[in-house]
Length: 137
Image 1 (cartoon, rainbow, N blue to C red):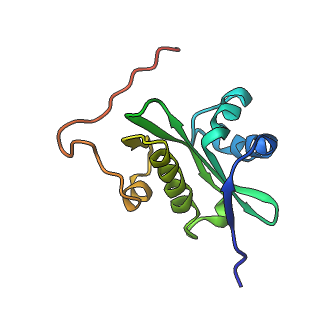
Image 2: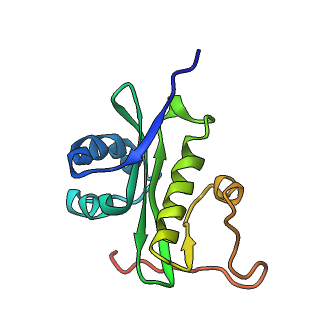
């Protein structure tokens, strides 16, 4: 029988565990590197997935304005993938943004399928894409 993963709001007490959990994802460049201060700020609108008191998933929604928010630091432990944890984390982030009356939530990802399964799509399909330039060589 598969053990149940619980998902809850993150708290300041989760910072050390979240930082440790996310480190391999940052080291592997699966998510952007974050300092402890940046992660602490994200906790306000973040969720953790927990299995047997161990963090096995994390996601936050960073609210930029009433117009736009972004899913940040979505990561799920290998042992908990394909169980709906990522989808649940994304859904909770979107619901949190909706509670804050944010009009649109974006996600920057290398794996579109999960987000498209959660209802995300290109803002203007076939017309525009976001482009970036890094300023910190």
